[in-house]
Length: 273
Image (cartoon, rainbow, N blue to C red; front, side, top):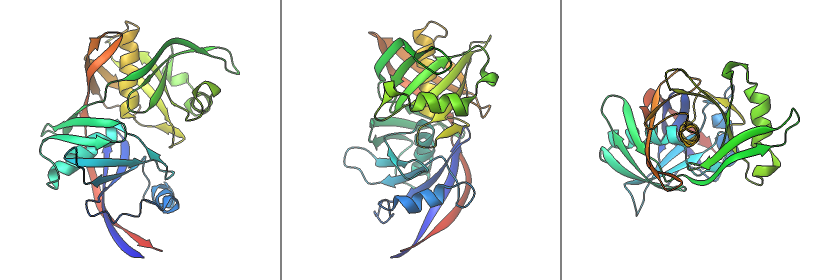
């Protein structure tokens, strides 16, 4: 099969994606090895994820998200903002839209200034005040699923954290098996902003930003009484995003993530099999 696949390259706070209009269903999503080759930084286009816009019977469109290793994931917050902006621009959705994802239904609003406000699925699977047994000693963490699972560790010196080593250890820790977890290291600054560095499952390394990770970090910080929502969040990219929500029972509802969705370039992929 020979295909030419038009794509858009976009990023949300430095988290970059390859986006494809797949409303006709022709994208070779079953070929994970090919997608991994496309996502490779040195030999492919390079990205933190591949996102497809597909038809939906329950929303304006369906978002399918693949990690750069070719494995499919339930959701990605930064990617959802990018795909919302693109879907609106190509006529696949209105400015205020519904998005079907494997993690559940999302709402997004394109704000018209390069930013998108994303209403997240309700966070679940809370675990607060937990401790991991690590090689270097015990590590306290909070955990919440904000569309995908996230462990959140508060640290005193964020710059000193070896995210590659410690993040991998948390991501593969036995307490999170079999699926593993994303790992976030956070520090609340004097102005109340939450700084975060994230090790992403599927990327298997630190990324400049992770949308669901920023939401998880802000919610855990709010749970601990470190911040109040809405809270500003600053990932490794240096961008500033906002996480909103309201306390409900022992968790939060109406959680939102507002931040940039930026076009980089357009191109074409050649698929030959």
